[in-house]
Image 1: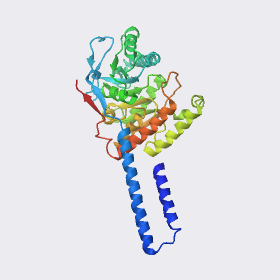
Image 2 (image 1 turned 90 degrees about the horizontal axis):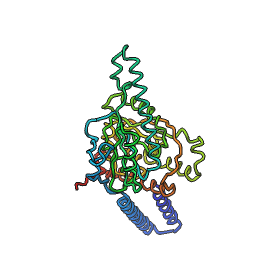
Image 3 (image 1 turned 180 degrees about the vertical axis):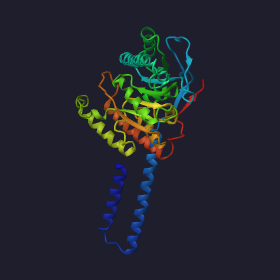
Image 4 (image 1 turned 120 degrees about the vertical axis):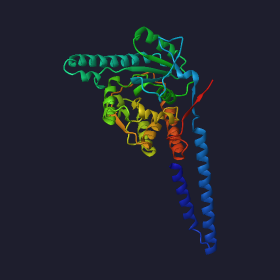
Length: 377
């Protein structure tokens, strides 16, 4: 937009300067005609340069290697088993997808919060059903009251610190009764690629994306679940996305104490999101989102971006297909150990926003445009 503004101002200046010279009528027509063709040539060159930049900056298709379609668990440590495909019927109520890159320190805390909450909720439901068993057997089969079945899928995005082995050891020693799966990506492709892979290979009727740092309070899953039920009416065939939001925390201590640069960049990002087309979502970047299986099937196959701004691409895909999106307030706190360089990441985000918008406007990305490919070995 800034570039177009500069060009328009330049063009206006040229026209104004030309009026300062007293040219004969024929010379005046010739000058205006020459200026028109010169400006058209400039605009054409600019469009070509922008398109070339778009091609250079656009990521290559996300590659899924055959080994990445298998998982290990504490029960199948030496013999990897095939993952469920998103297009297959659901096998559990909930899949918790955790993208992880060098997370041996933070993942154990996050995993403890996850398992603790899910088991606590199931215990509460069992007790509730037990009390009501004599009066109403129908409640036992109600999805809102029966214990949830779940799986945890840790997608190791090419870690170099032994994240996969540490996760499997933790599952074996501390959580032997739970379905914790670990997938190894052969190469580090980015958080977006790891989330996409996990979603495309999950068995949940509902699919939760959650960061490995444990910054979002996992108990707020219940708020996301309620929001999903309001969208779909509890129908497994319903489409919906529920986005965890930290927007309500803007004036809280957790945000106020963040650096001036970080808060300024956050405001600039919100302004750009308005231009891109997702300004109706106050917090696009919170790593706590819930997708219904039917919605995920219509979104993740068409995700191209492997890096941080993949959330925006997903929300644009939902908007293009009229998939309902609801924003729900969640609690969040800063967690140390982040590998994010704020300034470098912000420049990358700015580039990625331009890449997303440009490719979608040109029809290179969007609904029906596959964002990845499988590599047969």
